[in-house]
Image 1: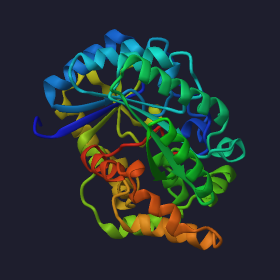
Image 2 (image 1 turned 60 degrees about the vertical axis):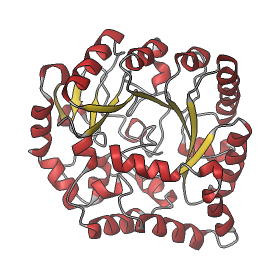
Image 3 (image 1 turned 45 degrees about the vertical axis):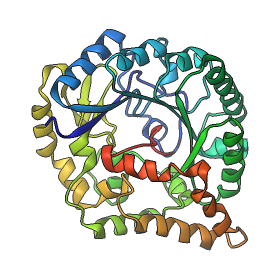
Image 4 (image 1 turned 30 degrees about the horizontal axis):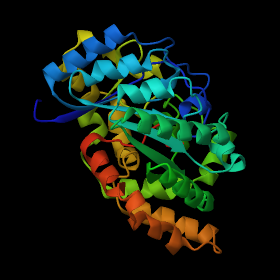
Length: 359
């Protein structure tokens, strides 16, 4: 197992401050997360065990939750950094209390998820968020990075929907003015259970609601067509299963980073179970078989280039007055040069831009 490059997604808290309709925190409110905060001592033991069992490339201190809620986030970052492995934080940046301390802790990457430049757009897809607060906190983060001489890379991740391309250009320019990197992702519906419910699987552990239908209608990547593309790809391996581990705030391993319901998909305490035993549980789980039969492991990792073509054509059809070639031509410029890096990161670890849900 030591030759496999592993990444770990650890929810160091049990909640998020937003309720995005594309994320289970927002669309599965009746299915609670494990509450509370992970203690630094527990994270230390988890990282130590991980590096003793496999080649660890990265610890992401988030999966479904907002790490800035954790009262000791800088200390959690320092725990990971002392082991000389990568440490990422992804945030909606609506909470600003710890910005300077977090930057001083010098995580490798801070990812900021956004889906608009104006509140009218952003507030729908980042529900309960305030884009003006986010922009103020982005400025504070930039100032903190300069004053502390932090080497942390800040990446603004813009979630593309069917009709937010004009605001993408404004956010791209704003991020550039702060010397932040900028990249984009096609938003999709999470978690895995919701996609299976969309396909009619009644035992998936989720119901497909009217609000879910509204979210799907906003997606640039049309869900039915995208699933058909993913099925046709016939990919026989799953990077999320093979190279990535999701751990809850109380130290339990989840079946996958893409499932949400801990009552159904919690496997075992990470500290009590060898890595090969955890992998055996994954490979023997019916949910993995169902997911791969439906091609959802391809969709969750943007695992076929045809998905990109499908989304762009859909945007073009719905926005005839928009200069799509100009908007997407920006992807080739320096400010979004890390799309290639993003694709490579997905190939290596199964994920890159989760906040979660790409909402």
